[in-house]
Length: 279
Length: 294
View 1 (tube, rainbow over the protein chains, first blue to last red):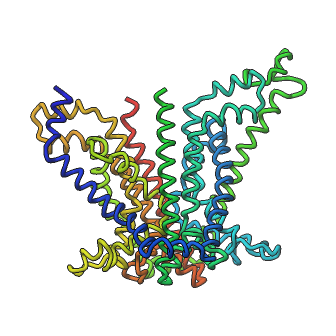
View 2: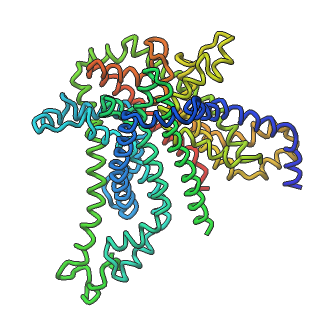
View 3: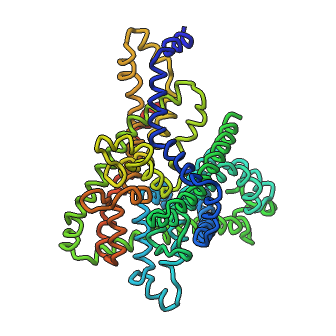
């Protein structure tokens, strides 16, 4: 009886109505706004779109966003792998439970508050402010501050994706390698890393998407000077505020494509990890 | 430990007490490296900044602190932030559960794409979300123009802030409810139904109760995310005090005016609330798992 009867019962009007409401809701909140990004960017044809992308301020902003990701993603990857290793391979790590529970903290802190903390620490009146002035080194309103802000808000992703994989794997393969004479870094490169690669890539992908798209924390610490400390998301907002709607939307399309690529890769990686589970 | 010693030390009678100390020394420093990196990075990036902010707040005299934290403009900013976040999270509690239900139980064309698209708010930079929402929901926008004849303005009002918060907190409820729904055995539903329960009763008494912790967790996660949101909300709001100015924007404006004390006080209030929310969410998740051991 079960399946066929159930699906018969559900073959009525209710599923159609519920699917309809779902699509309407997602349409209003997601699909129409998403379509609007592309519509506005290409409204006047591909020519103006391309010429917007050759503006010096845009090129600088895109380059800066790329640089921010290039610096902060590797930092967070090293941290994430170290944290995951320390927390799963070492049960007497002091404060293990505490660190496990606070590793997600950067996600619950408002990006603006994160930026504020960086300004209070490295700004002119901050703890390290005087020292930085004496040594003629700028963090706030300069690239280093933007890197710190970006690294802060994208900190937990890698650790978060790798910890469960490491936990599930257990120590067996690593100990086998060790008894066979492998050194620690050999074990890491040849045993651990290949085993966690999909989880790690997934974490990297999310870190990168967040790093390139961050707005709040970066806008607090950057000072938002076009051509100097303006990343791509800041460029979008600034252009929109200056009524350069076309320029704003052209840059938004680039960030939208980044999101699209992220989602596609995410889907592929998710399939990779579930296939592994089935095996 | 004995197993994991390098083979060279097997030649020794007792590898642990190898005279050259290779067994222990070759491992301990390596373990220390990951430890040290984790501890130093967390300290520098997380603990020191948080402590610095509390110290900065402590330099403000308590009476002054209280005055800033409860000034009319701050109170109205909390009100806009929390009320709007809460309503957006509730909307997603209802519609997110519906989306999860439809994605798990029904088949329809392009279902895989719809499923993947739920994560758009995670991947899309918030500035882009704010930009396109403020256009679409403006009086001349595709959706805003449908409401304009009724005198309802969405962009540059509190309603717009709500729409932005709804967008960015959309995936949380769907993604927490989906796995629970997938695990749920349809036998229980069929039993309820064959015992004579109506569809409504089956839903209300059999399906909803086990979903409830997941829905609540999703709502709480979405709420916490919406409270801190800045990028999309600052663009779609007019940022007028007492109307649609949210707390994160108020902090930003205080900083722009070099009013560090004012920014810090409101920042501390917001930070403490986020910490309380985080603890609450952890408790909720523990409550949701309370039957797992059985």
